[in-house]
Amino acid sequence: MTSDSFVPPLCAGGHILAQRRGPLGLITLNRAGALNALSLAMVRDLTTVLLQWRDDPAVKGVLVQGAGREGKPPAFCAGGDIRFFHQAALAGDPRLEDFFTEEYALNHLIHRYPKPYIALMDGVCMGGGMGISQGASLRVVTELSKLAMPETNIGLFPDVGGGWFLARCPGHVGEYLALTGEVLGAADALAVGLADVMLPSARLPAVVESLADGSAGTGGQLEAAVRARAEAPGESRLAALQAQIDQHFSAASLAAIVASLGRDDSAWAQHTLAGLRKRSPLMMAVTLEQVRRARQMSLADDLRMERDLVRHCFHLRPGTASETVEGIRALVVDKDHQPRWNPARVEDVTPDLVAGFFASPWPAVVHPLRALD
Image: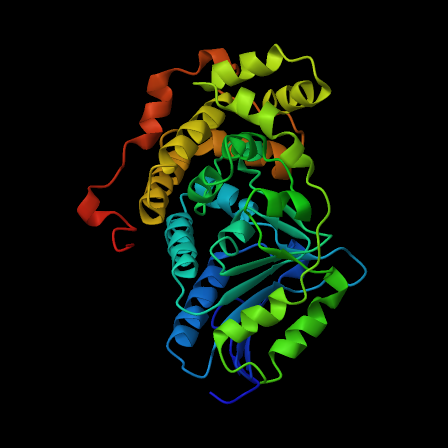
C-alpha cells in the first residue's frame, strides 16, 4: 500500500475512513450525524483495517479520531447504536449477537495491539467509544472531552471491557463511575487513569499532520511527538471526592451503598443518591457485582463475562421484559424518561436475580470469545 492511500470501507457505508499517511495509519469514525456511534458494519471495518495494518511493516502506528460536526461540538464516539439494539432485540435479529461478540473481540484486539495506537478522545467519548479508546497505548483528551460509561441509564451495564478498566481506577471510583455513569472532563479522566495526556482540541488537526509528515521513523517516536505537546489539565474535582466515594462505594452491597449515601446529608451524596434512584435496581446490582469480579480477572476473562451478561440482558427476560429494552425505550425511543423497572426498588433485588446473569449460557469450549487470550 502506498503512502496516502486508503483502505476502502467494505460495508460501513463510508462510516470508517482508513488512510495511510507516511508511517501513520489514520482511522476516522465518519458517522458524525450519530455522534460517530458504532454500527456492526463499523466494528467489522475497524477490525479488518487494524488486522491489515498490524501486519503491514510500513505502518508504524495507528491513530483513531472522530469526524467533526460543522458548527457543533466534537464527538469521538458516543457508543454503540442503541436504537439498533432495541429494534434487533424485539425482532429477534441475530445480528444483535454478532454485534457484541465482534465488538468485544475488537476491544481485545485494541488492548493487545502490538503497535502504538493513539486515540483522540475529543468531545463525547462514551460506552463503545471508551471500548475502542481505553486499550490505546496513548489516550488523548481535550478541554472538550466528555468521558463516561453511562450504560446504567438504559438498564445495561458498563461493557466493552468496562468492568476491567473501571475496576482499575483508584479506590472504589470504579464502582462509582459504573453505577452513576458520571461524565468526566479531562482533569478527572487523567486523575483516575482513564486518559494519559491532554491537548487543546483546536491543535489536534496540526498534531495529526505532524505525525503524517514521515519524520517519525518508529511508533515510539509517533507517541513521543504527541506527548511532547501535552498541557496541564487543571484540578480534578473527582480527586477531591475520593474519600467520600471510597466511604460509600466500598459498602458490601448496592442496598448498603444506597443506605450509606442516605445517611450523608452533603449535596454531593444527595445528588448521587437521586441519580441512582432513577436507574434499574437490578442492573445496578449486576453492575456492582461485575466490577468487583473484574477486579480479579484478566481482560479476556472479563470480556467473556460481559458477553455472558449482555446475552442475559436481552434473553433472560426476552422482548419488552428486558430491563435494557425498557431502558432504551424510555430514553431514546418513546423519550418519556419513565422506565418501568422490575423490580422497582433496590430493596427487592435478590441475590438469585443477580446470580442468574453470571451463569454462562455457553460451555467454555463453545463460548463466542473462547479464543481471547
